[in-house]
Image (cartoon, one colour):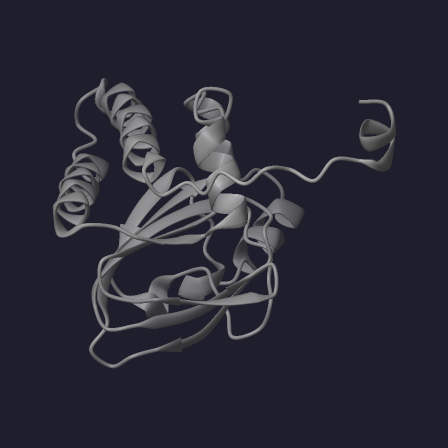
Length: 193
């Protein structure tokens, strides 16, 4: 509840543009116009998971350009530089956006899913099988339906457990796509082997 005039003035100046809205917890979005992404580089303080059913999406993560095509999974971590370049007219896909606050509240940490986090940092887009995309679609639709059934006191807990399950599922889906490269040794390691 707003009690002072200064708080009222601040509240009335909050932008109502859908791109500038703050996601309190999470959103499942179909339309790219509603995404918190811009045509110029920005650092959204949220985690974004997406999959593409058809069409293409050109996006940059940390100034590296990627094309998300049919049956591709896309993920960006909080505070990565993200830029949306182009969306094809026939694009069909869904986006799951989770705020950092929500990730912290639900205790979704990257210790259990560290490999997912590291994979997404290096390879934000991954081509998946049609079956894997179907699995993601089911998770996204369940989360979207839970989001709007807030009459239950336990809906937040149910959503948190679904999110945890989704993280583990993504870990399993991406496991076969990880590129295991031998890290280059430092000069010190080379000398003292």
